[in-house]
Figure 1 (cartoon, helix red, strand yellow):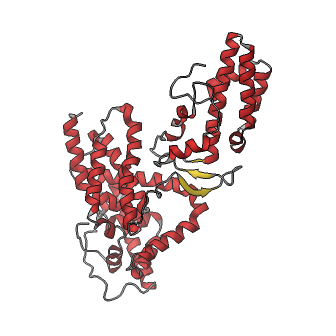
Figure 2 (figure 1 turned 180 degrees about the vertical axis):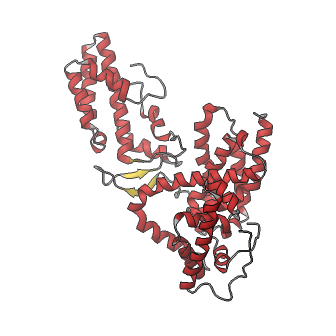
Figure 3 (figure 1 turned 120 degrees about the horizontal axis):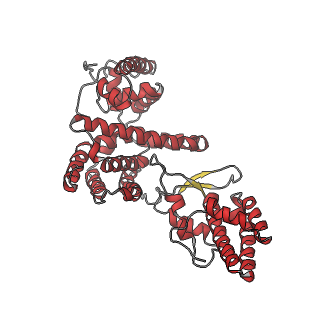
Length: 235
Length: 181
């Protein structure tokens, strides 16, 4: 504030109660702000990099986050405060599922831990699908996912990896390969991850199609419903 | 489009000039933990759009406009979870305010501010904290100047009445002066 005098006594009180004032007075703030500015301008600006720059916005913010939390909390350690774990639970069909922040620094370790037991076809892995959670909306916001949602999306991607294997085996006329892929689709549908995210119903009709040798639903699924792997996969 | 080093210099100038004001803006309207992210997001937008930011004082207003949008997106996202954790958040924020020593008047004043309607509160805060004139507020918020003046008048009256009721506005209050309205 530049020091203009308030118009009324109420405004004077309002100004005196400015919640930002004590935090802005901290001498550590300037260097944290300098660091943030330097990190923003360190990134070039071609359009293709917009997305990563948006992610940069969150990461660089963590420096200041730590500082502002420290100021409020009297210097209490804050590393755990900006976490993927929000502590907020509940969603239709998954009342005990926790909402997770994909823009938190620890999101990927948390997501890897949640999905470690979900089997992908050879050559594919959950690492190919983190972009689902990390992408920004047009307005710059990021969508939160429940842990059931993270597991369900990755289980869905794993199911897609086996659908690719099945279709590839079908194209080669490889009956044992089709059987193996079909078994994996059965296992994926029965998995806890798929069940928790209510995705089992979706995969059942694909399994039925695979069991009966019907190529159409699997082709449609891969074309319309499956997420694209970050690195192309050839079964 | 200007050269990269010119763009960097321009951004650094804007950033140095306005970063504290923008951080204060977010600290007054969001949790401290979120204010840093919001500031970062706001200036990332500014960096991306450095070529279209108007010069002079209008650059400051442009930044406040971006800050307002960034904050609005953040608040929309928060609303979806507020009904679940609202009670806990309220308890925590009250505890945080109580932890900051000189609370008595500050908490009451903040409550009086909260009692204003959203639009009136926004106009009041932009006037008192960011020290924007009604014309500048109209620019930032997209409202007409007449509407801003009406809201400001109403907000001042209501805030005084609220604080009167709470017996905060006393004769020993900081001395007011007349600002151009």
